[in-house]
Image (cartoon, rainbow, N blue to C red; front, side, top):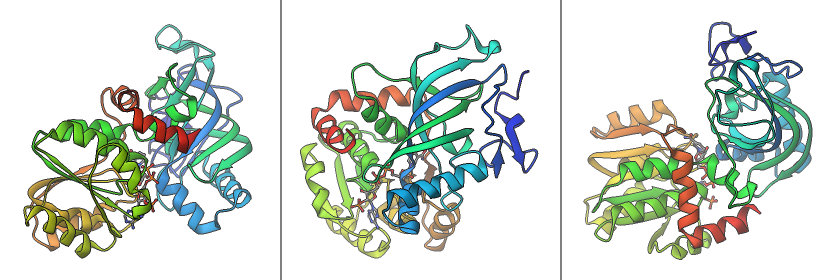
Amino acid sequence: MIGNKYGAHRVIEPKGVLPQPAWKIDNDVSKIYDNEILVDVLTLNIDAASFTQIKKDVGENEEKISAKILEIVNSRGKMHNPVTGSGGMLIGKIEKIGDALKGKVNIDVGDEIATLVSLSLTPLNIKKIKKVHLDNDQVDVEAKAIIFESGVYAKLPKDMDKRLALAVLDVAGAPAQTARLVNPNDTVVIIGASGKSGLLCAYAAKKYAGPTGRVIAIVHSKSKAEYLKKIGITEIFEADATDAVKVEKIVSDVTNGKMADITINVVNVPDTEMASILATKEYGTVYFFSMATSFTKAALGAEGIGKDINMIIGNGYMTNHAEIALEVVRESKEIRELFEKMYL
Ligand code: NAP
C-alpha cells in the first residue's frame, strides 16, 4: 500500500489539498502505508505563536491547555492551531519503517529523532498528555505520529539533552537563514531578540556581521536583556514591537537615520510587521520568521508607506539547517548554559 509521497492520501477534508493546508487529516496509526514511518512520540514542542495564543485563550492552566491541545488534535488529526495556523515539531523513537522505505532511509527502528516538518501537517494520535511545561512550550505525551516519504527529520544528537535539542531544532531555520542573509559590516535589527530564536539569531548575526557590523536588539522587556549581554550584544532597547513608530525612532536614533540592512522578526505575537518594515532601510531586507506574521499586513503595509524592500517568508527548512542551529549551541557555551536553564 503506497501512499502519496507528500501525504495527500491521508487528507480527509477538503479533498485535493496537501496535509498542511488541509482542515482534517487521517491520524489512524493502527496501520501505516508502506512509504510511511511510525514514531512513538515523547514530547511535542508547540510553536511559540500557537502556545502563546492558547495560553491567552484558556489561561496559564495545565489542564485547560491539555484540553485545548486534545480538542485540536482530535478534530483535525494534527496539532494545527486554527487561529495561528502554526504547528511545532516533535521528538520520539522510530517504531516502524514502511517496507518501501526500508534500506532507503538513514534511520533504524529504535533511533531517536526530531521531526523537522511542522506538526501542522503531521498525523498525530494522542493517547494521553502527561505534562504541559508552561514556561517552555513543550508537552510530554503518550502518542504516535506518522512521517511521510517526503518528511524531514534529524537523529537526535548524542552530545546534548533531548529537550535541549528539541528546543533548538524547533527554530533551526532562523539562525541558519540569519547566517545566510547577514554579510560583514551589516546593521542587523532583531525584533523579539531575547526569545529562543532571537538569541540564536543574535549570535549568528553578530558572528556574520563581524567586528564592523552591528546587532541592535529590540526586546519586550529589559528583564531578559541579561541573556543578550551574555552573548556580547550591547545595543539593547526595550519596545513593544506593535508600536511601529517607537521602534522606528529607536533604530533611527542609533543609526543616525541609516536604518537596518536586515531586520529579523522573531516575535510570538501579531501586528509587528510595520515595526520591522520601518526599521529597515530602502532596498534592505526583512526576514519574517514569526508565525504571527500576516502576508497581507506586510505587503500592504510596505506598499502603503512606499517602501521598496525585500521581504522574506521564514521557511522553517533550509539545507543543513539542523546542523547549523545545533552548531550554535556547541559553539556558544553561554547559549548552551542559558538554554539548559530554560529547557532542562
Ligand atoms: P519565544 O522564545 O517565545 O520568543 C518570542 C519573543 O517575542 C520573546 O522574546 C517575547 O518577549 C517577544 N515578544 C512578544 N511580544 C512582543 C512585543 N509586543 N514586542 C516585542 N517583543 C515581543 O519564541 P520562539 O520559539 O523563538 O519563536 C519565535 C517566532 O518564530 C514565533 O512566532 C514562532 O511561531 C516562530 N517560528 C517560526 C518557524 C518557521 O518555520 N518560520 C518555526 C518555529 C517558530 P517576552 O517574552 O519578553 O514577551
